[in-house]
Structure formats: C-alpha cells, structure tokens
Image 1 (cartoon, each protein chain N blue to C red):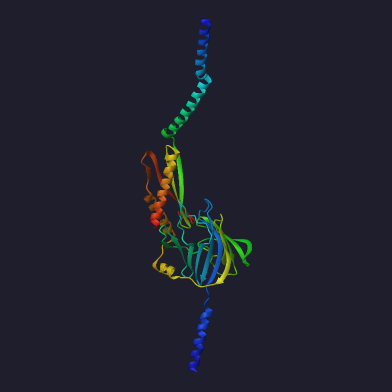
Image 2: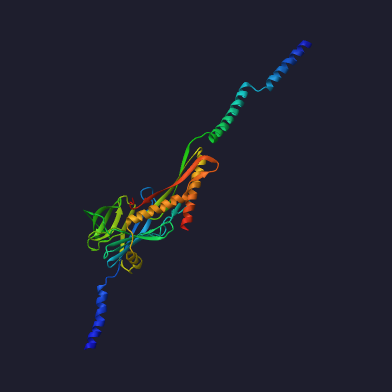
Length: 103
Length: 251
C-alpha cells in the first residue's frame, strides 16, 4: 500500500512538474516573437548605421515675370531622413538669402 | 483790317492744330500668361494695354484681380506689377523694355524694333468685328501667331510684336503660354514718355547686355548661397543650384 501511495505521489509530482513547463510549441512561439523583435531592432539599427545612398532634391522658384529662376538643393546622405532634412534646410536657407537680398 | 486778320488767325490756328493732332488710342487686351512656361502650369489672367500716341507706343500687362499668388515658403513671387512692358518709338526706330531685378529695381534695355520675319497665311477671321489676317513668325526661341487688321494701318502690336501691315489684335505663342486678344479700342490719355526718352538720350544697352545682366545677377546669388553641410554627418553635403528659365532665349 505504501509503495502504491509513493508511486501515485511520484506520478502526480512528475505530472505537475511537466504541466508547469511551457510546451515546446509555446517555447517556439516565444522564441519567434523574440527573434522578430530582435529583427526589427536589428533592421532599424542597420538603416541608421550602414551606408545606404539616398538622394533628395527640393526645388523652389524665384519668379521675376518673364524670367524664372529655379533653386534646387540635391542632397545625398546615408539615410533618406537625413537627406530630406538637409535638402529642406538648404532650400530654406537659399530662400532666406533671397529674401534678405530683396529687402 | 489788320486786326481782323490777326483775330481770324488766332481762332483758326488752334483749331487746325487740334485737328492735326490724333488723340492717343488705347487698345485693351485680355489674356493669360504662364510664368512657369512649359515646365508646369502657373497661368494667370492678364489685362494688356497698348497705348498708341502718334509715332510712339507703350505696351504693358498686369495681372487681373483674383489671380493666384504663387508666393509661399519655397516660391518667391518677385514679378513686378506690370510685365512685358515695351516702349516703341517709330521715329527713332527704337524699342525699349523694362526688367525688374531681385531687388525689384527696374532697368531699361533696348532691343531691335521688329526684327521678326513674318510668314503670311491665307486664313482670315474677325476679332471684335474687325477682319484680320494670320501671320506667323519665330522670335527669340519661340513661334508666334499674330492676327492683324489691315484696316488699322499701324504696324504695332502687343509686347515686342509688330511690323505687319496692320495692327495685331491677337497674338500667342505656339505652346499657348502667353495669349493676348483685343477686347476694346478707345481714345484715351497719353502716357509718360520722359522715362524712356531720357533713357534713349543717355544711351541704353541692348539685348546681349540684358542677357549678361540676368546671368551675372543669378551667378552672384548662387555664390552667396554657399554650400550647406551637416555637423553630425561628414558624408552629407548639399549645394544649391540655380537654373534660369527665360521667356526669350538669352543664351
């Protein structure tokens, strides 16, 4: 009888310990989601660190009636965000210079 | 008897003088102009006036009310109030035109009076009830069509166009970026000629000088814009570039 009770307790303990462990599927799912997150973080890191040529051109005009001048700022930078910001700044500076001259 | 003769002369002379003088005539035009030419659409409605006063004339055109203003953050509209302003003096065979620079200062330059070679067509139509004939020409890089009225024996027209055996009542370029059509003919007041007459007397530079002036003006502007660089990005650099687009070919 004692032996039987002991084996039931051992089986119950084994069952409970098994139930507490995450299943292999759950383990796989967890690792996939971690990998995905890691990948996104990694991709973001790549975009900011690896040299990728991005060229952005911004254009403005100075209209004098029968003459029009087109001011263009073309920027090449490792990221498109950087290139856009620089091109916008370049054009704004150019427009500001023209406005200063005309005053 | 002597007194009577003097009195008669005093009355007759002013009458003859007044009859001999032709009053200035104002030819009013309606039309459009695309300030971006063929590159994109920025059409505005314009009103044009050609004032013919004896052997001198003045053409100018102004934006109609309600036109779009193209000035914004990156587009600066420095076009003067009046554009395509041209003064013609048939007596001295002169043609002067205005140009307003970036500082909005007006400069006067000379050009050849009616150098264009017209090709006459057989087509006819009426403009404002006046029979007109068609002629075409090439002028400073653009093709133009003119409808002129042989019944108005003045070899003039809007802007720099003219030299046909009759007043041009409608004119437009091949791409229809500039178009002027007569809307009325009225007697009117003359115009101030001193500005142009003194320019002729002092000597006016010609079209090549105008082209050179425009190029130098934008070269100086390009030089003042300089190179932009980013503090946090060694590889990033941008240089503003200026491209000139002119209604009349200037190179």
